[in-house]
Figure 1: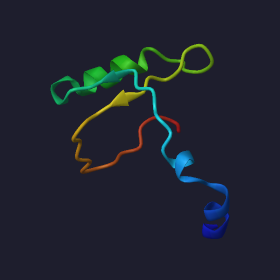
Figure 2: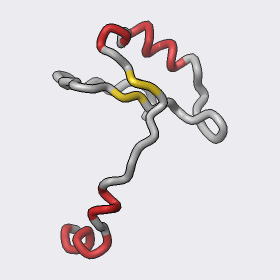
Figure 3: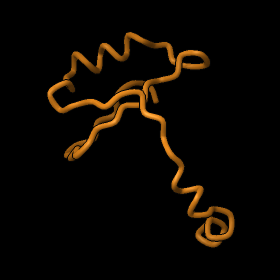
Figure 4: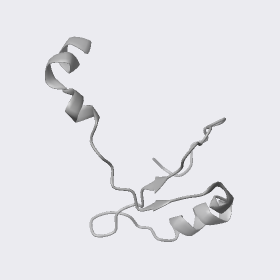
Length: 68
C-alpha cells in the first residue's frame, strides 16, 4: 500500500483546499445546534452537507451518531 501511495499520490494531492461553509466558535456549539443542522437534511445533490470549521479544537471523545 505504501509503495502504491508513494507512486500515485503527490504532495499536491494531499494539500487540496477545502471550501468551508462557516466558522463555528466554541460558544456556538451545543447539542441544540447539532440537531438544527440535522433539520437541514436530507443531504445530497443540490443540498450538500455543511462543512464546518472549528479552530483550536481538542477532541477528547468520539461517539458514532446516525447511520453512517
